[in-house]
Image 1 (cartoon, rainbow, N blue to C red):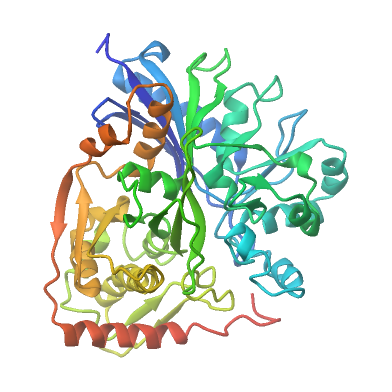
Image 2 (image 1 turned 30 degrees about the vertical axis):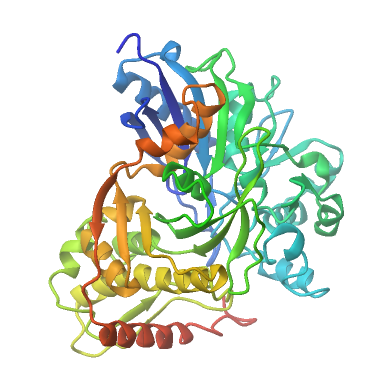
Amino acid sequence: MANKKYVISIDQGTTSSRAIVFDHDGQIVSVGQLEHEQIFPHAGWVEHDPKEIWNNTREAIGQALSKASITRHDIVSVGITNQRETTVVWDKFTGEPVYNAIVWQDTRTQKIVEELSADGGKERFKSIVGLPLDTYFAGTKIKWILDNVEGARERAEAGDLLFGTTDSWVIWNLTGGVNGGVHVTDVTNASRTLLMDIRTLQWREDIAQVFGIPTSMLPEIKPSSGEFGIVEDNQLLREVPITGVLGDQQSATFGQAAFDAGESKNTYGTGCFLIFNTGEEVVESENGLLTTVGYKLGDEPTHYALEGSIAVAGSLVQWLRDNLRMIDSAPEIEKLAKTVEDNGGAYVVPAFSGLYAPYWRPDARGAIVGLTRYVNRGHIARAVQESTAYQTADVMDAVNKDSGVPLTELRVDGGMTANEDLMQFQADILGVDVVRPAVTETTALGAAYAAGLAVGYWSDLGELKTNWAEGKRWTPNMDEAERERLLRLWHKAVTKSFDWVDDDVN
């Protein structure tokens, strides 16, 4: 191993922080991983401790290097991918966060969304930023912190506070923190704030002003592949350049080698995210999808995408495990679901944070419907598993309508793709083949690719495409009438989750 060189990817996710070392073939050499606490102060509120995330990131790097028996001298560059929208505001002089990180799933900013929507509606800024006003995005979360944390607004206006998604927080700490830490982000993460013009890739001062956010808080926006900063001297990766940053879903798309218009992927993680590459064209969705930046390599043209965002996928399985104690570990769900032939007529609509694409219903809340005395825990497990496939079918339908060119297969990745029963059901309910790559850690791989391209470790996208290999394919074998029946009942179930939240309901 001594003469080989590697790229290390930091994957700062919703439930854990990981560091993965990749070789030139895009194969995993080693992994370090630590979960962090999920903090739920009130119904609908979700927070993380930014300092715990940073400490875990450092430890994960140490684990990955030691498992591979390598040092910083064997690493050519660092790539970073991250949970997007999750908002950290910290003091640039002390390095202390002024509040916990407010996580992308958090719905506390609904009142702010309603206030901002009063003049011009939810799509007020959509033609500029690609996004509707929604609790999901970072802009409303920054405003909440400035409005609700004592002294925060004054400190922000004095230029003392910095905002970042978790990529910015990790980079600032890696590159020195209070001692000259670099305050940057990339175009994909910036495109999830409600504050960046997706065509010029610049912050919009006029929109920031409407939110009451001083632009001095905002990081510098960089291409996804290029120079971000150098790791400072007291870190394990000291002097190694950080040269690739992509938000997690864009990174997974890049890791799937879906570089061209018309290519897509679906990632099954905490949530579920289908991204459809629209090339150099900004496509405005008519069917409830988001317009987002796909990637930008150095000075090359920006690539855009349509995204279908599903808030709850893997986290529904966690809920079954942690809140209902129906299973002891997430993989057990497949075994439990297999104890029954079908869902027994039960459907689970996991609208824990309202419903995202294609419905955008913040008033929705989770529902289990179709219950009879016949339904047992096996049926509930199957219904939980199936809900992810149904939600994906809704998003894929929107993608097909927007693109006008129906997808003929779906590339998939993420932890839940290990559930073969779910993947077969996904193929059945979509009516197209579902394909899992040989390397399923595509989120971390995408950031590694962006980082490696910037330093010449990989020469071009063509070389990366040759790294992609099919791991497994599932072909639909459900008849059309049954598919239509299941989807009809699912859509009926979804309507039962609507209109739950009103003024006196959390």
